[in-house]
Length: 256
Image (cartoon, rainbow, N blue to C red; front, side, top):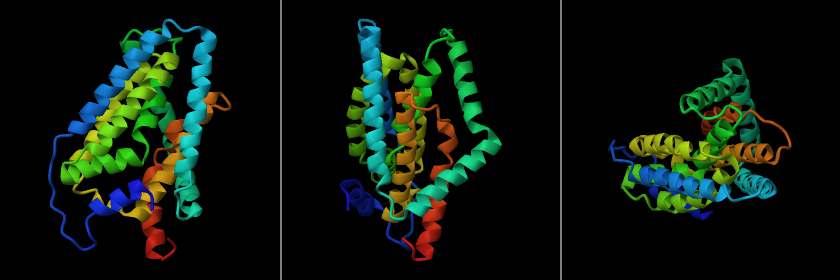
């Protein structure tokens, strides 16, 4: 069992135990959002002094690192069928709803309101950074853990990592990365506020499938950063919901 899974198992409510709903201010989400902004500002300042070739090299390095992290996450699955079914179900659902087009259109409208040049990579930086920071076991475990126990240590650790990542991402993609702090605060803050009700997600058999499905999304982000193929990242997001549903189903059938 991994360290994250051990933490999840230790804070998850026992089966059959009553869950008391408690609202906690998402302090760790606030700190994480600030860390993203600080790292982004540092990255943008550094980016002004970097040559185009250097920025391209940073871009490739980010892509390779992101893809490798995603691969490690994907290997957490207890049954690869769940991961594949979740991703496919999510893509089919989103294609019908055109979620990716809507998200990118919203990002571009936000970019226009900020009077950012249309030719910049602002929207790409915002969407890419938001997904990197908000998909992963540390986000889920750390936020829910704070909501359940008040302990935000895991998110504070994640904040340091995100600060470092923001520096390199912002150096390559610009100010859109800084605005991903909004998504970080909304997603992590919501998980913290609902932590008492979402404790069931901490069960290892659910968490592993969430992590694995999120890992495939992170790999897709890496592929985009490397310029190998343009993948509609938002199309995968509902896969996280399907991962939970399929994990519950397969667990009931004794398949995980």
